[in-house]
Image 1 (tube, helix red, strand yellow):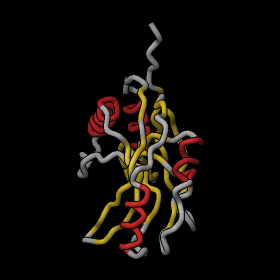
Image 2: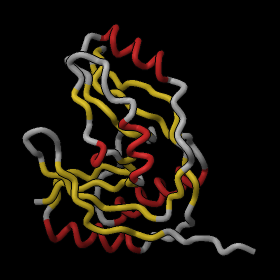
Image 3: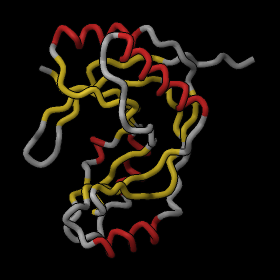
Length: 183
């Protein structure tokens, strides 16, 4: 069995800029910068034979490269408790289009539809054990965060293994997006 997800990986300079935010919340479990990514679709545990079907479906996706900007901070809650802290991604048509193509491709190979609405973000910390007032104050202090736009030229199928301190992500396959030639 493999635990898989489809994501946009981040270049080193962007991971470094985001990592500069880490710290200052007691009880927060900060995500290692190497694990920063923007999930397009979580797949979960699947059989090895089905992973080949997923790879074939994703390899058939055609799309254009695009620019993506990360900005602002926010939180996700579960049962009224703040669970995670994230940097947001500006919505744009190209990102939504790519995410829709990934979702459609995965449904075509028999995976159930994603139940959650797509909310583009990069998780930077787990904060379920942090004092909520400290998390809220952190978001207010850093919500003007804005990173330089990144060029998205591929998306990636990643596998995930649970590690002692953090999950270990491995890029299994990169799928290139087409770069528009300058006129």
